[in-house]
Image 1: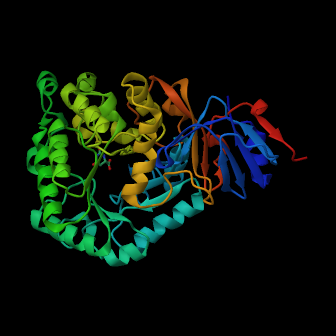
Image 2 (image 1 turned 90 degrees about the vertical axis):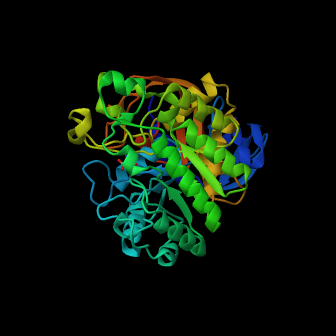
Image 3 (image 1 turned 45 degrees about the horizontal axis):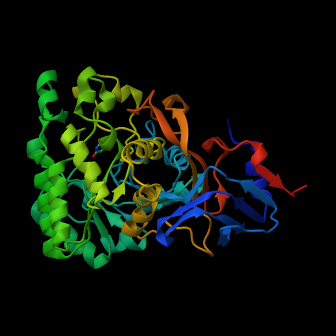
Length: 453
Ligand code: DOR
């Protein structure tokens, strides 16, 4: 069922819109229950259990969840330089389709996002595409070379909220210390790609039983733990805000948990693929399952879920890493790591955490909207009166089969092809606008009531 074409047209014409009968799940205001939303000129004018007002357009959202627009702290949009894999337009359309209204894009482009002009280019392309808000995360060091720091004050002025050399770690502890110190003076968050390159070198999967059986070079869990430990200690030393990207191991979780107990300002993310898959997935040597950090063992997978439960890991981020079919179509060792995730993130998270593990919907919305907003300080993450409507309307129970051929992303390196997921985005609204017609599957036209002639 596609969006009723009239929905988008009517939405554009309507000055007032009543979203009726949905279940509002907004952890920031502790609302979880039936609420109507009244929008005027794209802004939220009223939120109440039942609104009896006439509107130009009324949409019946019964059976659906109304959440704040989702935020993804970690995506690769590949532009500039990697437009054969993804563009800012295709990546943000994929984001919208996945329910995201805000995404933070990583600086490992060609050239890297390490100065004002590169950041302004990304912002310009995002604005032109208009599918989601994009927050470029700039490089922490020039050229992501790990030697000289970038001009973080200038980057902050250009609109940057965080820095990282993601794709690779800042190898030198001395340079990382300076990154944290300097970022602190500029009020920037530091996101760390925590990996000990010496230990990880040459590895293509998690080091353990399956790497031995398959005869593939492994990356030990210690490669992550050692780097997380170093960066947490440096955050403690410098007082800077540290965010640990793509946590994949139990050992890293334990280090983060103990640091937080000491009061260190550290937050963390993990990705849906670490919750849904383990290293056994590589038994067919399929390069779609190669990712860095690698899919880990069952014990790690369970530890990540426990860490989300007790709040040690704050957010789910996709690490959406598009690659061309050409690049992935080789033997495992010769392919780049990374998998796409924007269009499956909510479905996989609901499937694993909500349906299987019993997490409340409010917990999932916290991890995917409210906490990303708090960590990045990008606004949103809540449904607030007077603000532009930024919503993700989804059906938490709708079953659908993942078919990457249908994706808005240019890339097809999705590890969930053929999976049946329960939980589907129906209606992303960004800055008061109903997103692109092709971007959504939506309610049939009988849900629409209009007084527009
Ligand atoms: O698997 C990964 N892919 N891990 C990274 O750190 C980088 C990313 C990419 O850019 O492809």
